[in-house]
Length: 353
Image: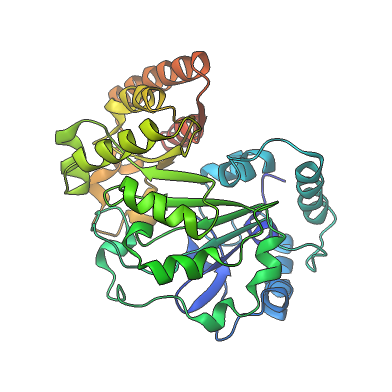
């Protein structure tokens, strides 16, 4: 089970001009489909069936060849939890997980269920140009996902567990674009998760957008809460984010900002415990950590961010071990769930072998 990437069995994504299986690491290696998207036809279309069969026949690393992918170490439950962190355990969710497991175990390429997770990247429009993000160099920031791609999305989204609204920057979209994105949601089953850098996430905008449709959870990208380090990494001031979080947390008793997504890098790893403490002080109960993958960036402009592979140093590794233990201890005592941090350590251990 660990040798097969589970993404094509549970996650599907829609971009500006394409639809594809989703992968944090090597999204360009997955098959893409252009034109009008009928979710059911593409989910079990010829290309998807052929792709799943190929993965099952070749086993591990069939897509990207990345032997250090942290997700290969996770169980399906852990992987799904990253996308459905706002959900409580349920019989229905357990059945869905079992369907994914059984389909892979029995070698099923034609699936009799819809995607568990739908990810939408409607635009590459963003107010930031973060050096670790592909959007930073995008030339398509004025494009927005076409209506034709959403033509038959209603049924497939309403049967999914999570509907992820990813990049560009959600809070930079117009009111009509937000209404368009929130339209196909079934609030009784599907949980909507919005990913944002938080810079434009004002209380005024938040209140207006939640009136358009259900937003169950917000994940904010923060790699460091140290103002100087944040500015070095992201190139902008962290103050607006802290103010926006404080305003929303201050108004609502229930958790509206439930998660942080953090990239672990040479620049940010020493401040991870402070990041976890920041989460506690703002009633944020989930942090997803993503290690910058040298497999993807070794030939790109982001190499200096690595704490892995070519940049491996025993001193950093030993320091990182202690930081992980401190973060896990604090998180356990304060009811915070950490995804990917232990996997990042495992990832780092592999690189030194």
